[in-house]
Image (cartoon, rainbow, N blue to C red; front, side):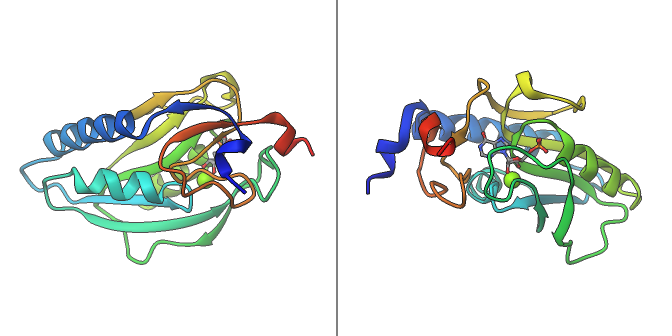
Length: 183
Ligand code: IMP
Ligand code: MG
């Protein structure tokens, strides 16, 4: 079965994403260069993996990488509102300059939880880089420093984002047909 048949439309082309992510990498490299910054980028599994790998290729200053896995959607298209850590960080983050890398901010509940988690661990600074944001759905206000694109209130897949673990490997961002997740 062709995955593209399940899409209503292609929202953001691969080339457009690549260009935007290059810009974000340049901006981060400028913002964090020099002195005694200890940049640690933390990718949130699994949705952010493609964005995270693309982004760190475009960061030209030294940085460390770590990953966390959180429970969010299960196989439903609605968030449960409850966040659970499935895989914690490998190292102590005290004193680090953290950038959390997310695929998409929807309600904001996940990031609200993560920001509290990091603040409690005495990090030096914390910012968010997200490929996408769906502002229409926000329940908690989240301050995003590095943003790829704003998307409409639809179910988005591709470039790491899934529906029931499918479509992550699409190299662009698409909108899933309603009939797929309403079945
Ligand atoms: P939040 O806690 O509601 O902000 O949810 C964030 C998480 O929900 C993201 O990291 C995604 O894994 C997932 N999510 C939210 N909207 C979408 C979507 O349109 N497509 C795929 N995953 C989504
Ligand atoms: Mg996710």
